[in-house]
Amino acid sequence: EKGGYPWFMLKEIAEQPQAIADTLLGRLGRYGELVLDEVRLSDDDLRVVDKVFVVACGTAYHAGLIAKYAIEHWTRLPVEVEVASEFRYRDPVLDRSTLVVVISQSGETMDTLMALRHAKEQSARVLAICNANGSTIPRESDAVLYTHAGPEVAVASTKGFLTQLVACYLVGLFLAQVRGIKYEDEISSIVADLRTLPEKVATVLEQMEPVRELGRSLADADRMLFLGRHVSFPVALEGALKLKELAYIHAEGFAAGELKHGPIAVIEEGTPVIVVVPPRARELLHGKVVSNIQEVRARGARTIVIAEEGDEDVVAYADHVIRVPRTPTLLAPVVTTVPLQVLACEIADTRGLDVDQPRNLAKSVTVE
Ligand code: M6R
Image (tube, rainbow, N blue to C red):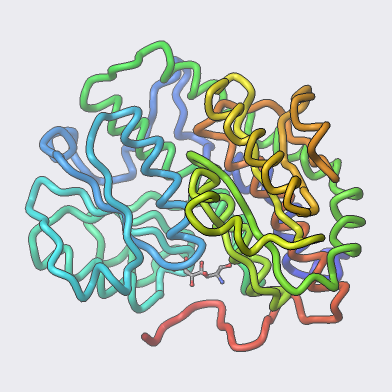
């Protein structure tokens, strides 16, 4: 049932192009418009929204962090993102014009469920992004947008995450469409770019052999740092989480701009530092991250750089370059996350660990 793969995780990584295509299917209209009738929220409900909260746990929370960049940019609505276990015990400011988006692959995560109830008690509208059909979270929400990733068996979320990202983009674009679009041209080109994501992820997957080899060479590392900026910051957090949960290696993700405010002090000769570089089109951001690579390398780091095709600026400072196809900034996490999944999987496998069932973890966390 692993389809010839040694681990479910590898099978699920390989299924990502299809999972993304299935999640987009029927939701992008012929003229670039979003067709989300299934969501069950009326246009009037969406027009009154004046604030968005995204609430989730673990990897789904990282999808929420990325969603904030996209939704705020496309809709000009303020977006807050919070882990469910914090949100549910706080007194967040919500009312009937607040849209709370809860994200959960399993639809059964206890903290996320309690957060959704907490939001409903304060009469906020709740929209679930969920993979498991008919599970508790979508049943209790006002509206649901299903991801069509198919069953995810490995404890580490992979295709669940990429399809959550796609669903977040759809929600953001749909909100922008209903509420009047600020950047009309940009949005129609983003819709066209969404359609190319399955193919781009497939291209990344075809180039994973050097990443596996790199993973084997990193299996003895005792810690690793992940750096990113803008949407690549949550990608760095996700890369670090994957490594912790699968390989039991201490890993931390940082916003690259925070380096000089502390994290750079932990770098020693040979410390592996993985840097997710923004597209070159974002000149200012790109230049800053390239400087960050230089800075950590000058302190002895072994630099592993994820950069788009044709980005030659990184080559001089990178011990290893992993290439991804050119993708607009806001959508780039869909491609840049993939090598980090493969890397964590390979490192764990080389260390002789159970990739699909890491110690101390369960696929769905139905207790606090
Ligand atoms: O089923 P959910 O999306 O609600 O699960 C949330 C987290 O427990 C989950 O993403 C967890 O962090 C994964 N093991 C990460 O790979």
